[in-house]
Amino acid sequence: MQVIPAIDLRGGKCVRLVEGQPEREIVYSQEPVEVARRWKRAGARFLHIIDLDGAFSGKPANLDTVGAIIQASSLPVELGGGLRTTSIIQSALDMGVERVIVGTRGLESPRWLSQICQKFPYKIALAIDAREGLVATHGWAKISQTPALELLSRLEGLLLAGLIYTDTARDGTLSGPNLSATREVAQAAKFPVFAAGGISSLKDVKALAQLPIAGMIIGRALYEGRLSLAQAIEAVRQGKGAESGF
Image (tube, rainbow, N blue to C red; front, side):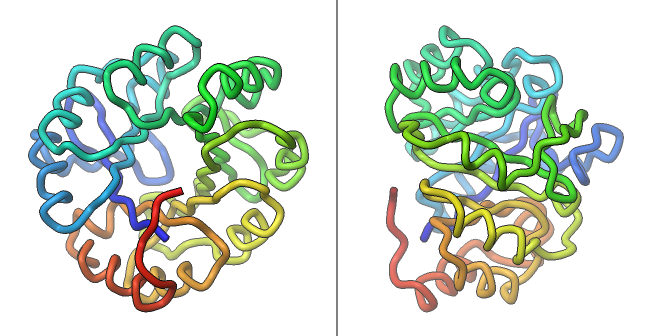
């Protein structure tokens, strides 16, 4: 099970958005590259990067910063935010991104999602962002009428690297993860599931480590010192065995 620190980019800075709302931005660093180096020193083996500008505009806006992070940290990276065309996904992979996270277009165009999974097998992770059980899209600005669990039934046979499940009402709030919803998704999914949203303490990490998930993505709790990355990694190691890839 992996413990993956999150780096959210907006305007070239490292930030967090409470519940994904742009007006509730918290800036943690003007130097995202140094943040990546810090997580590597603390034991990170993978980085989760979201281009928030790209998520809101529909087109990546921080690729130079992502490239600098990859070069400086030498860590594998998954990248999401505005990656909505095959050519942009190809460019991201060519620059060294390990896997690409797709959300809005992948959910709105199942045929395109199938095509990119065929073209880039096991290099695509699908973001399932939900609020009160319903899938959110367009940088979480739109809430669909599709239940997250219903969506899973449409993904049979896709060559996905995994699913990233985020409870948007918990993200950036430090209110604790939605354990019951995460468990339901993990049990229903036929792909590795990574949980995100609300993780605030070692207790949360240990609780998630008991679920049938492949890993967890942690943001604000790490930046505010409520939880150390080394502590989280050790807690998972003790609870589930050594971290592994997928």
